[in-house]
Length: 452
Ligand SMILES: *Cc1c(COP(=O)(O)O)cnc(C)c1O
Image 1 (spheres, protein in one colour):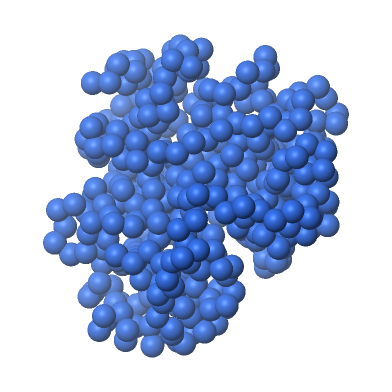
Image 2 (tube, rainbow, N blue to C red):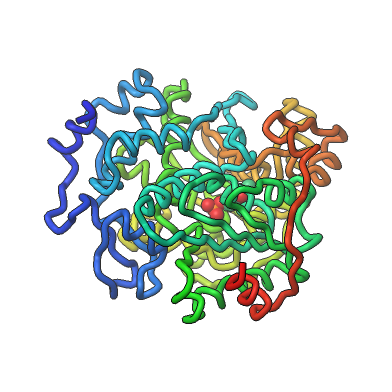
């Protein structure tokens, strides 16, 4: 057994007596059986429609934080993830999955004396979702390795998520991916990221909106006929296999953190999966002074922290569109981490809503003063962090969740500079788009799927 793991099993980690696979997960609706990691990842959502949540939060081995510089990214990945995965994946296979998941850089870059940027956009689709998508796809491939029937993953995308999911599943055996996107409503790079992959990835270009795409996917999951004939699953962001590996960013940042005091961390938030993973890392023992959930005009959580009233609303469109969420699905997991106590949550996490004008001004100001180019999501986080730091002497970092080249109109308008294509997407410039055009009709979709 891995040296560090021995430590975990011998000391803090509670081995659950129920579990065949170690850690068990319960539904936050409390009306479904507990399951192990494999079953939770394969199901996505519990039968009672609740989100799965780990039965106990593993504590980091003694000395792990003090000596974090001695460990490689791969060792950190294994140590953090192993207790959650339990025995459902053999150690050597888990290590391989982790190595493939994180095989790019996560640099912490200094912007000002007290603000740093953790760049999470160096993965294959230039999105922080690459980590979650790569980990989840490989886990599903592993769990399906002996299955007789192929699994078909259905995803609807408004742009960013789809690319990370599709790329994450590319070439994973036993899994086909079908991705629905609204024709003419995603940027050129985003479209090529969905349509140029080939292999086990099929892109359906729907004559309609993102909501039409999502409606087709939802109906497909409820269709008995389809369920009997095809092994359908979702790559939804509430899946624990996408949620849990996001903790690793926070450890990689801490490894590079040179300041004396623990950091304040500002996370651009939409569905609140990323920040929830950060809080989970903190509850496991990672030092963090304070969390800031930075939101755009979709201000459900900032309002909640002011008033203790949680009022979901239809999403409002903004220039940081990956955060246009009117009912953040992971927030309930954050509440669970704070034992549903509003007061403890408020002590550890602040939240701020930043409008589009301020976001664009922030991109411009940070470029002019510090020659650093933020994307709109990172800019929301930057503004919220700099406002927070006005009142104290702390230092902190933002999570820069997407490469600015993915939002060229907004960013080039603000900086007056054109953005170079990073090497990961150079090949897309000459790639060929291959999509299947389809009307926004569930019946057309079903007929296509059954005869494909
Ligand atoms: C998905 C996404 C977010 C929001 O992340 P959540 O985990 O949903 O809060 C922020 N920025 C970018 C670029 C994203 O793609």
